[in-house]
Length: 535
Image (tube, rainbow, N blue to C red; front, side, top):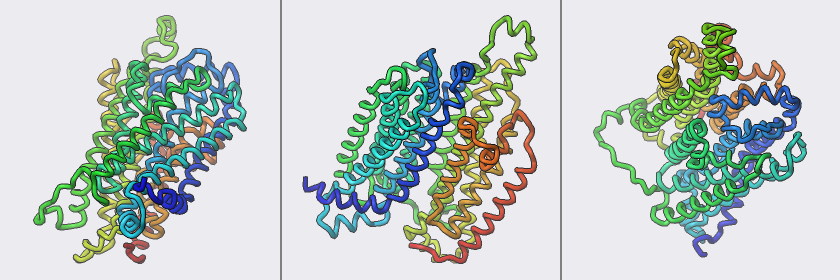
């Protein structure tokens, strides 16, 4: 047990450093979750409202997003569980990834782990054990707060067993993926690649869940993320998924412990190949950035194309509207039915445009934000030995990040169109996907500008861009669900293009979003040139 010496001392230090980050995450996640639960009765509290949403949830489009319905006897609580489980599971997983990377690879990159192990009587596995305990504490607090909040919300048809199972299932999936992240922290040597491995693994489990839900829900057991659907909250209240997720997390931690003993501090199991001293990619900041980011960029583009193709593959099922019967077709006529089916698909494409845009912003922002990471690690001091202006350096990261986000969005939309048209009897025209692409460009520019401004003036607060992005998505996606007022809905930039491609793009929001983005970029460059470089 000497290898775990001073684990609780390190845990105390970690919590002292991360308490604000954890508090903000937990307040936002728990607060939104409980707020939706408390308001759900006014949205889906009558038989008519439940019947209307039931038809929507049975469509393949909604099954791909939320999962399948496991019962025909719907009520307010069951609809809440169906609509909230998958998306809140995503948020909890992201929260755990952000914690695990910082308390493992983040500390090793800063040199803190080596200093602690080399200069103090601390066990070799103490940092890893402390990271595990911090994840356990964070998820336990989430479970307790969410469960108590659900009980206080007193949602119709909910019960104590279902409320606590809901909270524990979400906490279990977050903890499980957080502990699996510790494995990737042993495999690769920097936090950037750990993050890539984390989301690659999560992306695979999400795609497996989505595709099996649409084709055969029995196969959803193949995806760890799909296990949360099998809890059947407020119907069967199955605790098996919780046991499986906790078991998977324990296995993940055990594997991480084994791998930790086979590597040196600040290195990974997967060795980094040495480069060529005369490589043309070492001649400038732009080419060096491209060389360092080429693998992760390719991963993002291919991954988003696969995601788009997966959603496009269910277009034929989406086109079969609820009243798809010979009588309805005879009364309305083929032309009207085609128009209705096309509008239904285009409404789904509009939702996908928001999802793809959020992910595109994340992919591009990770590159742009990496400028400050390299600044703190002292890498920019090497580049600064050559005559290199700060403006050119910031421009390289900003331009690469923005262009990457544009390519990611385009790849996802084109893949969706190609896969969708391959299964549709009446293919969708390219113009619809092009309209969504053009409508989302000002939003990509807006978030890029905000991030650049933060890096220029207050780089330690650059994570605020994720808060703004997440808040915009939640408002856009759940705003009408929780009956937000019009002024609150307008706070999300996605609101202004919610009817594209069913309607034409409004030039006014395009103009003011682009203007704000340009102002933010100018401020960011001014601030970056004036402030001190950190190391």
